[in-house]
Length: 230
Image 1 (spheres, helix red, strand yellow):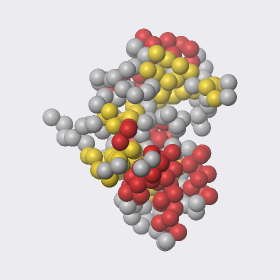
Image 2 (image 1 turned 60 degrees about the horizontal axis):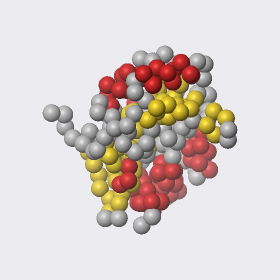
Image 3 (image 1 turned 180 degrees about the vertical axis):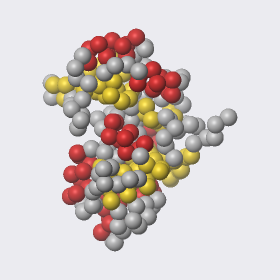
């Protein structure tokens, strides 16, 4: 099967967790888009949900497919969020997210959720985060060069994300610095160190947040759950 078919398979499995009357966080990215479509199919069959979109792109898709949207101002809790990830660490299920450019809103919604269900294909599984790609860090445009230098002092190779020759802007009007640290030995420690840098809005490290990770490969679908702390 190709990657899109694997993503669709995993997304459909994740949507099975959604129950009538739930408030559901809707992630951003190609895999999350499959989950939105699968959820919309159930809505058309009578399922009642309120979606909380993590990006303008997801909001447009959800509205086009008939999913009722709400906001965190209106909803006191989110029952379940379904989202993708760029890397998933085996064992503790720590995540890197943000290559789609929506990491701040994704983390806000995930933190407000009772459960975070991550949907990936098997290529996203790693022994250590940072093994495959950069760690996105969302930063304030003002003085971003100073923020980048501080990230370099933590050991990162830093690149300002660009789009069509201009700095990429998130939905919140921020920049993203793509930071290559290599394999990350201590994601929680690195997350804390990054958060202390002035100018950082949020990092793409999602530690101790995923309730389960649904993984699809050619052999089928597997549900991974976080290993208990020693």
